[in-house]
Image (tube, rainbow, N blue to C red; front, side, top):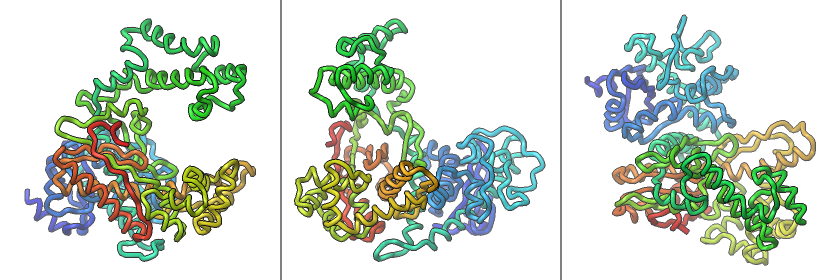
Length: 584
């Protein structure tokens, strides 16, 4: 096939957007400036050749439905525009199927959700299609909305001839390009909040990084986190005993875990919080619940507290992160895999399943580099107060951010110790006003008036039912103002914090996208294997450890310069380790 000639005739030029829909085992539908281009053949080979020849900005409805089979085949996709990810950025909320994205991009009423499961709607269900497309009159219906049969994937089902399926895929890719172009126009027209804007506009950059994060989420799920299974089993065995060989042994191990606590607390059901709370109150503990953080504050007051905390740790390992979890989620190749989302419904953070975002500290020694490799870990330091300095333009807080430890100059400005300064900053962002935070906040008002004014404005907007927005322009929906006073206060505190957390998530994803690109530019041997709130974990060949550490730092500096204008310094603690637990 003269692929280059076909692309040229279709109007595809290097670096331009190029629509993509994948039909596994059949081919791809492409769409360039000149229109749809159906191509039969191995999708991975076709896309790899186009990537090498044109370096396009791949444009798809969602990475989850389009990029997954390519990533699994080892294809590296350098740049993309993810319609679903950008729709979430523009509109907020969690719905991001093609029908909703098309309607928003064309100023049409949002259609009903697609009938099929969310993953199928994301990627048009190209990996698992059934059902015929009856009476097809095209992908756009008489109301200008996307036709349900196309959104639900039935247009690409096996009832049609291969050539017709490919032609429809190319038409569907062309609609993704049209939607992306409309999204880009909206992004480009948004005001740029940076003090010294430089092209491209911040909202456009944020759209690119959100798209890259969606692609990275697919790669994270495919690559997995390296786990030393023997070390993980040793940790579990030390806490809950050897692997039970049947229901009777499992019941005996459970009773053995319970025994030390029941000796102190009495014959209560430890898995019933109400019974545990009642027993604690009989011992004189006036606590509203039995959460671990609340019990931590009572350490040393009674032997039962220590016993309960140890029981909770063992119970969590036994029931959530025990032998069954290892068998189900850690593959034979020693990788922990779970589904990833590039943006949660509220703050926009990356999230993961299978315990990847809640792995107990006890299991961190089991996250280990494979032979010949190391883990390179980077953790953003004090990122939220630094983000607040960007959002508010507070010169004093920006000056404090120039230090590795931001809380040290804050403490000096408040005339307090470091611990009090940290309480003051966190209380300001979370809306805490009682207790020790009250006096600290009053000092914050005097030292950093612009930062506190920004947070108050966000809280007032939330209380009034007005949405707030992140630095990159993502709307944070707060709901109606027609609520009781207590509920309005909760919404206000949510808005106060969400605008900071959501912006921090955008910075993190822009940094992660830059690191991903740098790893690929270095030869592609290293991989991002975990994105945990403010922490990146890379798995790289040992010989590349120094270069990977330098990349993490330089990518952060470059990202902050583009993203914030360079007025606020961001810092990361970088460590090269063999096991995750070795990073401090």
